[in-house]
Length: 293
Image (tube, rainbow, N blue to C red; front, side):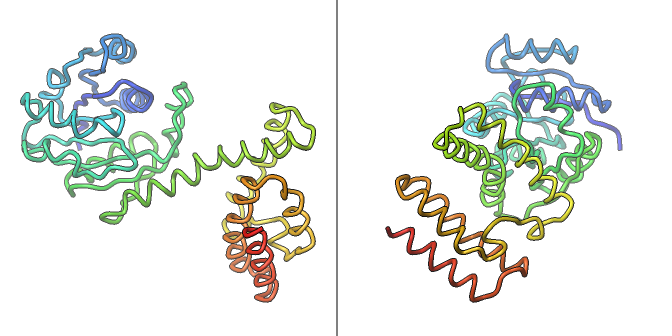
């Protein structure tokens, strides 16, 4: 399959990672459209291509259009490009949102393009590491069948692994990604605050937790879930669990998070097979009582 010429609409973190990654994979990037001339030119200089604030100027001749704008404006941008004749029949138009379905690109489909979404299951921080992270990254795909064929080829050319989502599942998929990534940051913040209450400085607390986090992620990679679960709930250690809850008596917000996660962790521990049903029931009772105190 011949690699199509590409237009990038959106010159932020994701657009930059995709643009540079695609160029390195041998795709011709025709141009970059950004919200401001400066943003477009910054990425275009790296790709040796045209820069514009009018997307339709670069999308008309592209075989593949990536819309990598913020989620809230993807539909609006697609509508503007369509109204200005920027989409053509036979074109493939993809957006990179994890939350929105391909249907948000309906204006492109109405112009004869095939549409889809291609979301990298990765956190982008706006650094060079973002580009390297595309290799080995898993990408969630959904949309028109013809668009998916092209999207799968693009993902493999980037060194990634494509997988298709069930119809209508995009919001739940994105929620899963938020739990694994965004909420992990929130949990580290909570753990660091708890360590601060024990006398550690904020930065010291975060640094102390990092090896534990890395070890846990490593165990998940080696052993899988639920086998990687450790800690008091995994071994039915009710006295330690009770001591934790008592220590958080003066911190109701912390205890609320701890007990909610504890209930779910009991289910994981049961699946692991290291605790009995009676131990699980006793821990659930303890957690439930702590929630109402």
